[in-house]
Length: 103
Image (cartoon, rainbow, N blue to C red; front, top):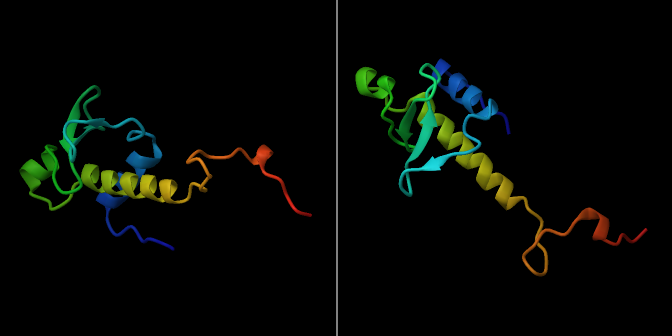
């Protein structure tokens, strides 16, 4: 599946995800996370998949900022990774070295 990035917010969101900025998210509550600011080092925005405390949302009144879009991308990738984990009889992943092959 190919996704076309239509605007700079989407491109910036993808850059946030690929940079690893969302690898260690901190939950504020079940739906909100602290997302690091790209401009102010050490600052964070409280973000969900539908709202954010960043200036883009506050002053420009955009529907989705790069932080919310990035969170959507990261959560989708996480769900995809979880769905692709091979099942094991005891719920654990079996190392490839322990799988017998029929040749």
